[in-house]
Image 1 (cartoon, helix red, strand yellow):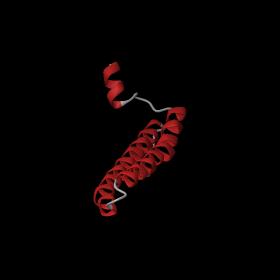
Image 2 (cartoon, one colour):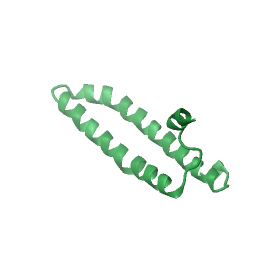
Image 3 (cartoon, helix red, strand yellow):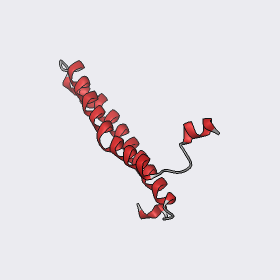
Image 4 (cartoon, helix red, strand yellow):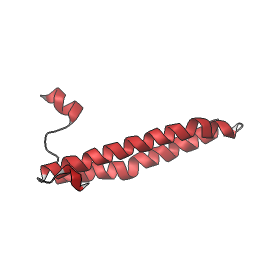
Length: 88
């Protein structure tokens, strides 16, 4: 049961965990993305076209991952307060 909770998460998402996850998704993940973008910019500074060829798909993948994680967090919280996930 503990391994299941580590992979899927706890069965209930209380208010504190919801707020912490929302703050992480809202601030920490985009900050890491910006730092990653500046790192790529520093590495590929002599050839800036490589920054856009390599950086844009990585940024898009990070954005899609962030949206999916945020939606799953919201849906999980809504289910815990007996609302439908369609409220998102």
